[in-house]
Amino acid sequence: MPTNIGQESYNRFYKFDEYSYNIAMYLMNNNEMIWKLLKYDDADAWNKPNLTFEEKGSLIYAGQSDGTPFKVFFDSGIPDVWTKESTIMRIYPYGIRPLNRTVSTSLVCFETYSHYRLNTLSNYKTRTVVIISEILKTLNGIEIDGGLGALFFDQSRDLGDKLLQSGSQPFKGYSVYMSTNIG
Image (cartoon, rainbow, N blue to C red; front, side):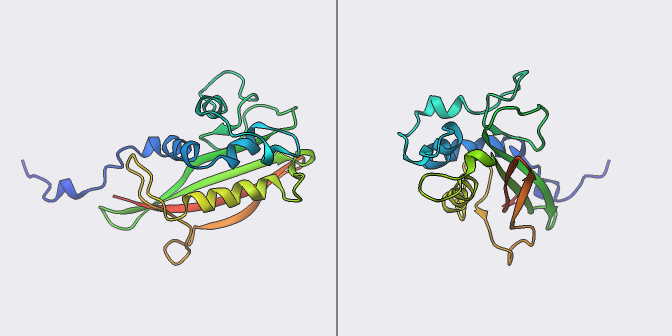
């Protein structure tokens, strides 16, 4: 029986299913502002005390039947009807582009949406812009443990990297696409 010479050099995408979780864990340990803006709905959310690790973890959806009490999701789309004014963030792999059999570029999407009544903060900034800004400040060029290479926001490395407005009234926000090489 012939063997596949070089078989061990093919990318197996180990831990691809853990990327969203690993990114959230990194943000839990390295950025306080995002979590305050997600948890607190008032205009002074940016000025509230930092959350504990447990409080941050309680904001992450883990498959419960009702997703509306949660603020962080690891997929796209909204399966539940949102009747409460809220702010949410989504972190999920958007796609993979193989560069060769060993290395691929994975596009990761970060979405943030806020009800328009909550979006303006008392410091004259908007909640969704601050969250996206904090994501870029915290993650651009950072290597995340667990098989995820350094995230980058650089169109010279991948044309998929971009920032776009997203959502629809009354929940508007932004989507930022960052890339990482995996292999």
